Image 1 (cartoon, helix red, strand yellow):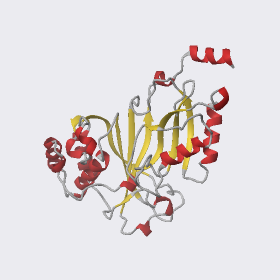
Image 2 (spheres, rainbow, N blue to C red):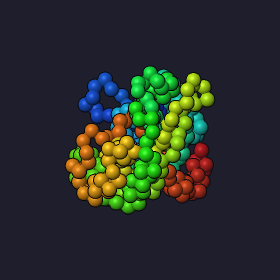
Image 3 (cartoon, rainbow, N blue to C red):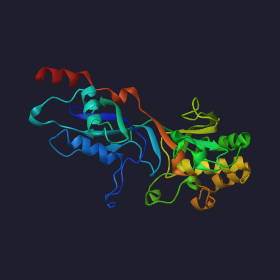
Image 4 (cartoon, rainbow, N blue to C red):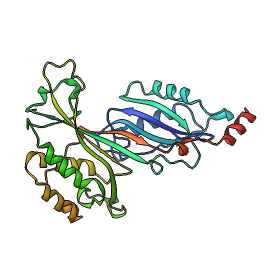
Length: 294
C-alpha cells in the first residue's frame, strides 16, 4: 500500500482474487471492499480508495497482489509504521480469507498498477479426476480437475513456445468494453509447463498427477491466461493441433478462439507482482523533513 508522507504500497494474500466488484452487485463484497473497510476503521481524515495492481475474475485466487492508497491520520499524527499498519489491517480482516503480508511507504508518484514490471500467474491442473470427490479438500476449487490421465506435454510445450515472446494476442482476449482502448500486443516473458504438487501431497492417500502452467508478462488482456490455458490443454488432449493454435494466434481476432475452450477460473492464481526497487524507495529528504517535525 502506498504512503509518501502518507502513502502505502501493500502486498496481500487472499484465497479469492476478486479485488473489486461492481457497486451494482448488492450483497457481494470483494477483497478490495474488505480492505477499504479495514482502512476506514483506522479513521483516516478522508475516505481511502485502493488502486490495485491486478484485477481478476470472480473465482480466481491470489497468493499475492498489491495495491496503493493515500492515508492521512487525524490530529497531524505521524504516518503509521509499516509493521503497525500490517498488524492493524489484519486485526480487522481476521474474519476474512485475506491477509496483508507487507507494507511499504513509497513516493507520492508511485502507482501500483502502472509501475508494475511484471505479473506472474500460475494455472494448476489435476489429471485423472472423474469427480471432485477424488480430490483432497485442500484442492477443492483450487485446480482444474481433468478426466484425462495423461496429456501430450511435449505438444503443449511446442505450442507454448509459439505463444512466448511478443505477439498481438487479440485472439486470446475475451471481448470487453475495455478492449476497444487496449493495445493487444503483449510480451510473454515466461510460459512454462511443469509438474506440480498437491497441497496435501505428503498426507493424501493417493498420488495426484498435477501440472502447473506459469505465465509472466508486464500485463495481460482480459481472460488471456484462461484462454491460453484452455487452448494448450486442448493441444495436450489432441483436440487442437499445434498448427491450429498457430492459426488462432495469427488471426488476431477474438472470434477465432474456439467456443467452450476457456479454462475455468478456479485453477488460476496470481502469484507475484514485481516492481523496481528504485520505484519503492522514499527519498532521504522526506525522512529528514519528517524527523525534523516529529
